[in-house]
Image 1 (cartoon, rainbow, N blue to C red):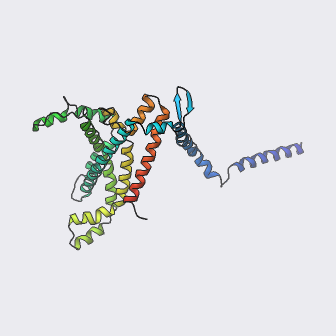
Image 2: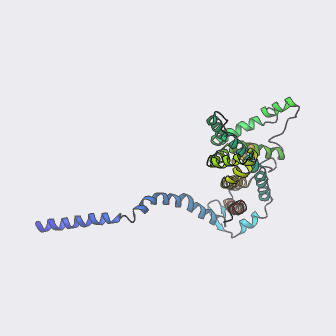
Image 3: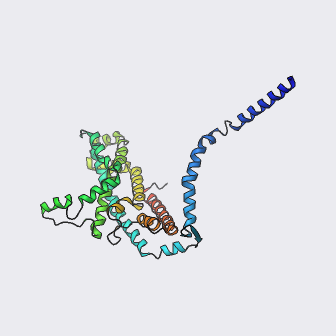
Length: 306
């Protein structure tokens, strides 16, 4: 009996030691990050690799066939793709500078020590960024209606005829730019405001003692000190505009006559309207390359030389 108990105790101790050896101080960090790593692999890495492979395939129902670079060759011969690319860059070139300029002006105004009720104004300007985009777009559709919209009604008081905001190519682009500017100006304003609050007040005091005016202080102190903020907002706003989808999809459905068709909206239609998933994947990867190149160029042009 005693020998049997010793054998059982030895086996039990061996199992306990074996279980304890599975988790050691060296592998504990890997155990903790394993769930997050698995989620990233499943929901990020796998879709990226899968869509890349899909861009070289043709999907017909549940069947897939390898077609090589046929989707990319078709893409560079597609006039609608070039039209969507042109529309996206037109909106980018016009909307981003206007939005960032307004964001900077508002941030400077809210940073002023003479302004009272700063919290109210900051929340008010930031509210569009957290407003449901579908609801906001529907409101703008009503406001910009050619016949019954409030905007045209107010313009009639100053003798301006009704503007076809959503039914002509030019004004449809203007409408999309207006909605984007309304939505994201406050978001970038908060970023600029954070940058302004980090500028040492000693710089302004020294400049004032040297006789520098407020305008000169703005261009000689504020703008240079905000250079990292400018880099961040320009790059992020550019990426966001290249991925523009919600505003044209809700307001104009890409029309009229593809005047507001953007790259991501065209990608969506190719994939979920015509179920051409291989072609949609090719569009997605061309967009990734374009975004990476533009971001790199911006970083080189406005970033630090080092």
